[in-house]
Length: 486
Image (cartoon, rainbow, N blue to C red; front, side, top):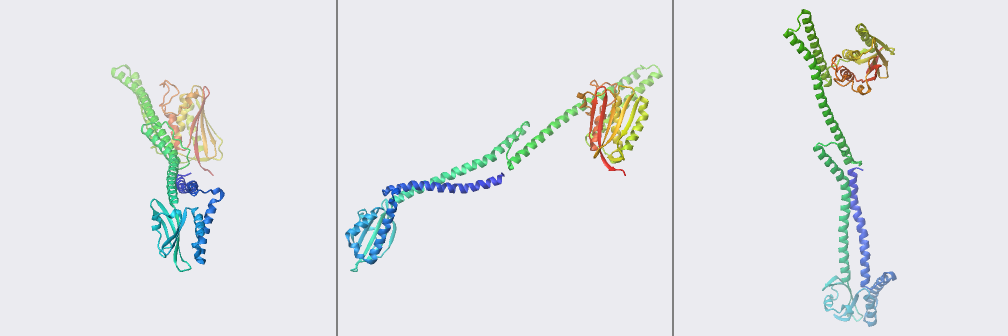
């Protein structure tokens, strides 16, 4: 549920729930004070006393009105007035009959001079409403009429409503207190429920931000919520993972940089030390014949070529690593291209006792998208690496080309000494050599396969190796197809 919908529902609940609870509270409180009203009048609701009281009051007033209209002299009957007084006493009411401004009948509850002073004159007002008398409150009804002899008269119904006022005051006070408590509890509870679902994940985010500030990324921001805050938590967790990966990658780059510097220093020191030693030998006159001098100079030249080649490969590797090496991609018919390269290699390698064979299952010819020179370097690097570790004579190198759906796969297999499974995962690492001692008898920078793998990656392909110790190694790589040759 989204936060917006949750807030809308909470606002509706804040309106509806207090109204419902207020109705319930008013009903309960009203029921309680109805009991007080019944106590005031000594009534029993269960036995119909309330109904009888209301009926008798209504009948009494109707009788008064009929008597005034039809036989006003009936009101001079003392027994009639006492019966009427008795009925009205049930509701804390009494009567006062005035004739010619003289009170000729007064109920017991109306004998207070303060009440009698409040009685209006004939024809002045029919109803005085509620009149405060001391600490009490009375209700006054006035009926003006004429006796048959023409004398003006007024009949007053006086009701003591003080208990109603006190009970009503208590009822309203209790109801207002109940409403206040309902509002406080309802709003507090709803606010707690809604804010808890929002504040708890925000607190988790704040704690996570503090840990990131302190440099700690080894934690996890968890949230099962499906709302906006939950999405924010998941985004924050993705950011933390990306940041952690970035820092770990940066640390790995730093380790690689240190290892690169160490390996460069090692590989450069060997030929430079040799150049320095032979140069000092020449300066000291160690070679005492033209043949020895020429040998020293040739050795120095060879070492300088090794240094130059290492620097070139370092420069190429650096540009590939930074993606600054330009590629000239074009359509290449792969079968004839591979045939030409292997034919060229045969001439050189057969002299060294290494046989090169090429095979393919592609028919008709297929074109790929490749940089001819870069792809040739990949193949040369792989074969050079195979020759370095060739321990059998005659050596054998089989180059194979297979067709795929969207790619072609090239594998170069030798019958050399092979690579252990532990070392196989590192053959494409820069400066890696299968011999841990970095034996100088095996020439090379350790960058050949790493450069080859990066060139293939720029072509959108992948490169991997399979090997079995004592049996040989196979290097595989893939290239994307272009369009089929018609």
